[in-house]
Image (cartoon, rainbow, N blue to C red; front, side, top):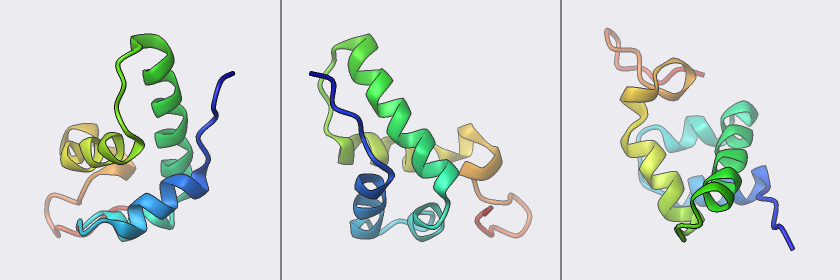
Length: 81
């Protein structure tokens, strides 16, 4: 049976992490939905097991490469929302 990750699960993980972007991502439903669906596709497509927490941390650590709503504003260092 396929497990579908929820935005509530993502929010709980973001709330537990000490990362500059985590509070902003926690309040952005589009980011949470993207992370949840990306995680589900990751597990389905790669069959490589990774915890949801590790997956979210990986996204946070590479946010600068994702750009847009995922990254910090390069001039002001303010998180995008």
